[in-house]
Image 1 (cartoon, rainbow, N blue to C red):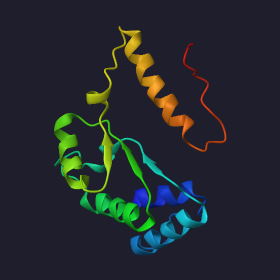
Image 2 (cartoon, rainbow, N blue to C red):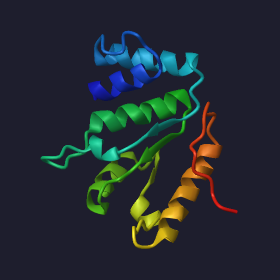
Image 3 (cartoon, rainbow, N blue to C red):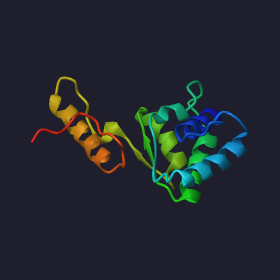
Length: 143
């Protein structure tokens, strides 16, 4: 939990990202979100929110993200690369607030079938077009 808060603060440019209690970090994160004009939080690799040994969902992380989504009126996108079994635990914990993308149900990535890779890249391209990024990826769909 503390590492996630530190990472989010650092990504927003907080020079003191690693300092303070979790409560202080959450308060600073809320302030930085507003000051930086954050309009969406995208978290990659949701598998880091599940304890590897017990496969227990780290509830403090999910609760913090739910509270941020609710209090800051922000969409939170979790890119989930968990197995379906582990993902159901995270999904159950966050179901009321967040939409979780599950690539195994949306996309079939198959190295031997280039069409599946192109389909996934097209999805990512469409997402990228909706984000206010300074630079874009080099991949473009073929016309």
